[in-house]
Length: 269
Length: 316
Image (cartoon, rainbow over all chains, first blue to last red; front, side):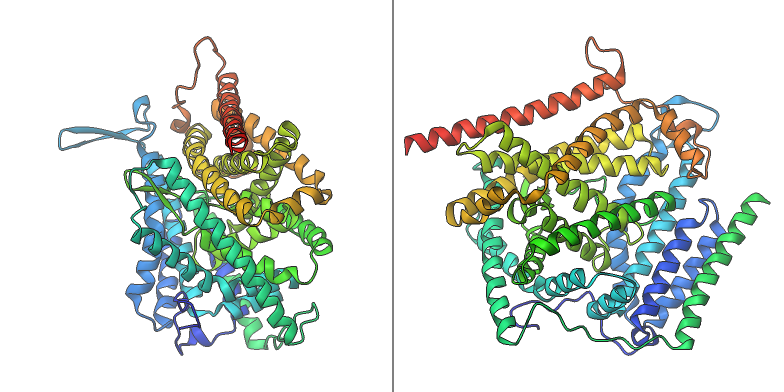
């Protein structure tokens, strides 16, 4: 437990290869994966399969409970299904040649196979992207990720804001949670006095949360000053990448490029 | 309200070209905001900005039930603008959106550029524009902060959702004829929740710590550029999106020219939702009219709130 707050459980501690890899290399790996997925043609099923295989290997390398990682990604993917599935049927009434019909329990379903393929492609792409991102955040501390982003060119001021935000995020989230609990205890959660009233109560809670946070930030500033803060943050320096790490980054980029080119070539041929 | 259409665009939904262009645009705007906010931001404000970013993130947990299990909660662009002024608000929202994407996978990493553009840039600029428009319209009347809060909250959500819908359409993910009405319709409702929460938060701050809101209003912080950008975003998206959804061929042509579409989508554009208003035969005009009427309703609502507030004030 961090003092006053819930320990962020996004990062799952471990000693695996993936945990120990430099955050900059992991960031490069993630970006290479996402760009590759973004560049693959919609119907490159073989390539999606290969990417899925690689993701599966990476998942195993993390030496974390698989169920947790898969469930995290699944929770994020389900809402996407709600967006995508209707698209298969949306043009059903037109009856053009591209549409197929399907008899199911007495219902006549009309759908377009082209749309179905497109939806499946987008789904494969976004599901794999989410799984990769879940994996990297589960094995990388936010502080290390920030360092990697700084190395990639994130301005120091934004980094300072993000670091402060992260430090107090879970403290303030715990505070918000307590406020929700207090409201629940007073049973204003879903009781009749009207939508407007409920919205205003929630707005009042938010206002109180902001005021408390502003006061907290003043105390934080005083504490920072007491420890010699002079407007400059001292950032820890990262070692330059070793040759092996550079090689790994280059390999990710090259691997992604090969997959994309191969997929394009197969689509043409 | 949990939207069935995402405001936080996930990876895989945008074509790479759209995503990269919006990354560049977002980096440019946020760089500008860093420069401007860096000038205005005294060093003791740094903790304030970081902690407020955390508070807005946490504030999104505070929800209220609307109906049938759906609940309304906040995005926060408008509130950040009212508390911090536009430049710093853009930074705060950029941090909020980035942490959502990087840590909680709420919105993609490649799509982060687009999400930053929609929520941290369009959302903030439009909210600031709405707030300054209210200042013009209502002057120094008593209810001004309340009206601004509601109007800025609603308009920022609505216009940001149009931007997201157009991005999805240009990417060829979802045809404009479906994406635009769906996003606009849902977010016109979600925006009311945003407006009401922002309104509630501002009323509480007005009651207990009014200097916080006043200082920003007085300073105006040389941000007419932001207000103009907000006006441009609002007008462009209000005009473009109905045009795109009623004349999908144009957008399809753009998408094809840029090489976004990898699949022929012949049967995709056949549905055009019934948007035609009685007596108006041009769908584009009809949709724009619908948008204008929507805005008029919001302004009327805002007006009513002012009247009521003034009434309360004169009674007490």
